Amino acid sequence: MLTAFSVGYLVDGIAYLLAGILRLRYLYENTYYTSTTSLECLTKNLYPILLVLGGQLKSIFP
Image 1: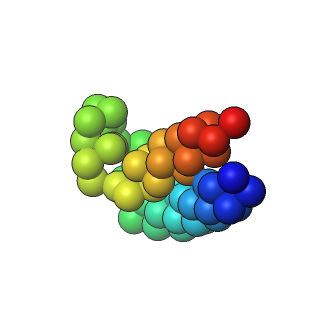
Image 2: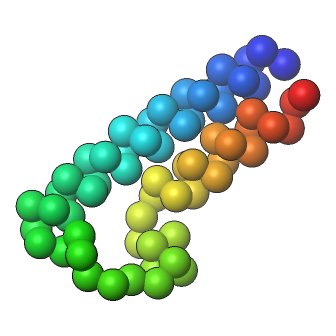
């Protein structure tokens, strides 16, 4: 059970790090403020999927 929590927090940490790096890249490329749909964001980026996965891993084992 503790392993699932640890893996969940590890996945969350990687996702937040990746989100920050990608958002900085979008700011440097001047593409941060372009409008995108939530489906485009989910399919073009990896970090939203990792955020969902990390949150679910922590909640599976109470």
